[in-house]
Length: 522
Image (tube, rainbow, N blue to C red):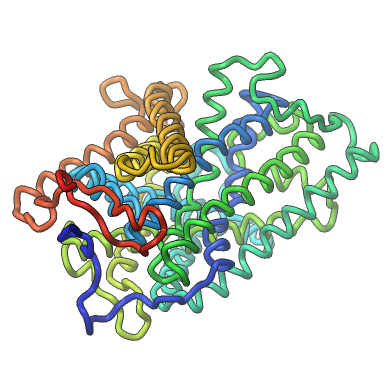
């Protein structure tokens, strides 16, 4: 018996719909990679990780990959069962229940709103820098005057409007611009890493350089404490976040029940290899002391590139610029598609589900995401850059929250199929459950660590709890409150839905999703 909600979220016949088959595996893979902003992400965290664990930094990034890959397995199997552009929201709603699904969907949207402006801000800074407009750049101090931040804020705001427009106009334009941006970024990182390592091995890297060793891949080696490794793991999770954007485009991808999931899995592996190569190069060339000087400064890549590449060091700056722009563009996609799915399933106002008749994109949801991200960025950047930094720290809490729920949802949704084969048991059961458990533990750890006022950028607290923890947990609580409000104002079509389990034929691959069995059915 198929559930009445099995087709929930699908448009009625004759209504405008997303453009099916607009992208293939390669472009889905590109979206997954670009959404993580590899150049920006590694530049942002490598100093923090090195300060904590020193030469074992590659090992910690390798360890951070483990829960991400395990959760990617959950995305693969859940997408096969339900290729809905709302991904986490739709899957958690089916497996755990509509209330939890609603909060998870809201959490997905908030992560994009917080990070988009920060991504374009870094790109804006380096655009002005590479063009020689040094007089328009802030000094980089914690208390820079607002007037010094206005030029980068204006350019960053323009970039947000630009990438939002591209997302509205459609995936045909978006995929070509993303190909160029991510191609430029990856090529630049590879050139930088290879040249730096060759100079180290050739003895031309200068004082402080260290010959790379495979022992660096051991996250618990070198006398590093367990707590330091866990903190590094928490930081490392951030740099892999975003690959699931490829699954949010499942309804617009060829072979929607399989291609997005495969692209998600492959993108995490590509990111791992890129991060390990760049980390080995940076730590080897600059040494632990040299990298530690840039603890929370993305200029670390540019500084090392100056020595390794000389006059060609500008290509690394270009990589960071394109990284921020490409990621801002692709980060809009999960939030807008989640809003679209929620609107179709009557968990959000119906206007959010509007599809532009010409561009075949969720234009209202996309403009909403871009607009709110713009307001968030401009207001807090001009008010306090430190608050903007604290909001980025809070992301780890929200990310761990909805990733872990997705892993548990996969196990719950497929629970009747897990004992039918060893493959099901390990890949649909053990892997997602392990990944979800690790991320749930990291969620608790993040809340505990980020509550410390001394470790926040603002140095401010609410009832003794630092801003990152307040903001991270607060966003989830805001989602909970809004869910209750939405529920109290009716909407029984959504909140009256029953939990489901996967249809056996879908789980076995004999039938394409969506088909589900209501709880209590045999």
